Image (cartoon, rainbow, N blue to C red):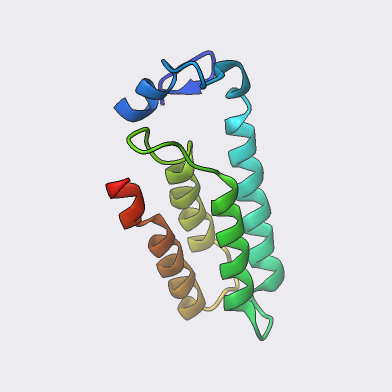
Amino acid sequence: MKSSKNFHFGCDMHRRMVKNDWSDKSKMGDYPLLLANKLSYTYQHVINNINKDDWYSDIYNYIDYTVESFGSFPYQYGGPLYIDYYYKSLINLISNIAGIEANKKKLLISLINQFAKPSIKNDKG
């Protein structure tokens, strides 16, 4: 991950974004910490709720809320910062949780992959 003053320059769209007046680069340095917190809290939420009767809907709602908290950029400026790292890291974390039934892991990983698919709105503007 390349960075300049802690800003992620992983793709052309995000490089284009920082050239705009509305983009305040000085406020973007905390994103790695925000990502780490979101991953940690989601991981703990999965552990705390995986054995409840409504585990799937509860975890779905938590991940949905967390994904929405990443925000969005205008059309052609890329997806939310670090969202791909969130998805990939969360899949890795869930894959390695001991004591979760294999079918539940498979359902959670499938759920995360569904969230990770770009929406038609993001692709078309």
